[in-house]
Image (cartoon, rainbow, N blue to C red; front, side):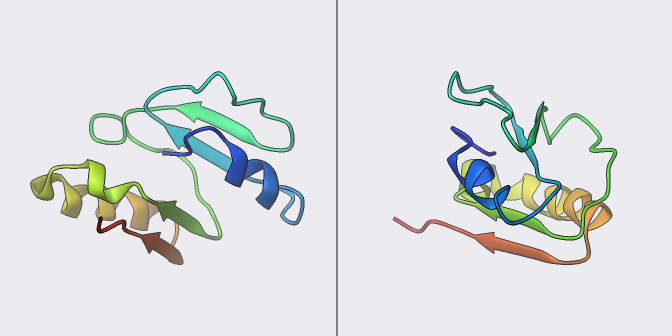
Length: 88
């Protein structure tokens, strides 16, 4: 999930092609310098490739039983991944 798009906007200053995905489109999503897709990553296929996939504060929102399928989908998108998982 890309939340309000702030990370996307900052990263797009340095990387020419940035894509964000979230279940819900925040009213703060502007798509200025990046592309946004509203998708349910549990039920929908993600049909694109990327050089790097970043998820920050995302995985902890899913049921533990869904994590292997999500990681498999992520691996189809990119071999290089970075996941930050909040443990509050």
